[in-house]
Length: 324
Image (spheres, helix red, strand yellow):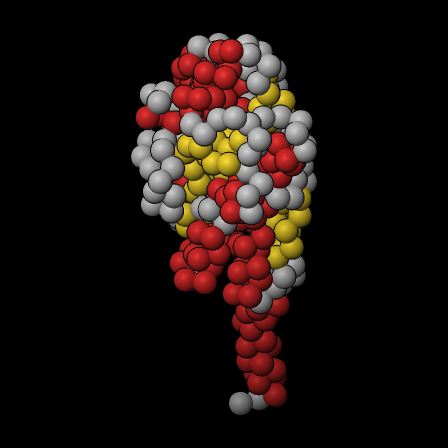
């Protein structure tokens, strides 16, 4: 073979190898990933987000940095993600409010959850628990209702944000019991619980990660769970619906990326998330925090979001709440 032909052969080989070399250098992830939690520290988003971020850091070989970006009931942190480059290096660990509630309660929203976000997987679910300060003279839903009727407009409850699920749970309770209470919104489940501990409010609907540890420490009293059946983790805790039928609200947490994120990146994050949540150690951490590990395919998560959007649209209209 001539020198010229050998040079051509070598050049062709190098040309074929160049894309592979470039792809290898850019294999995802090649740098730290930022996971935005649109809430304050201490709530369900924060707890589940940090558990997942640590697990993904270990399996991906790149640090996944969890970052609290609270404000506007989750809208601020969510908007940050929707406006981030769709490259897989900024993701969102969200709860239901910013994704399926706010589109039904705000006239103007800086994002469309269906258009602007790419679902990856559900991560955990958690029932909302009705928790009161130990000094409040009630130990059941019936006693709370009786107290509210005796003191119309004087019983104050906190929530993790206006039009979030805890707020709507309180609205459903008032409608079902035909009582009048006062709602105060805070920037996350942690601050909402702190408001009870500080004597600013009387009760709240909080997720397990928020209220169960405080109850175990004797700082809150749990009186009911807002699900359609009793929790295996708290079998002695009655449901709110046993006293007030129809008051059922459940929380969920899911991982999403900006719309337009490459399919292979979504697939990678989905596979690693499922592996992490299925890990017995991680699953135990989620359960110890009061949640239940759960995963889904991106397609299942997308369909679930659309179903929840429709369900809460009907609920908000039925509650006759003014749009913001």
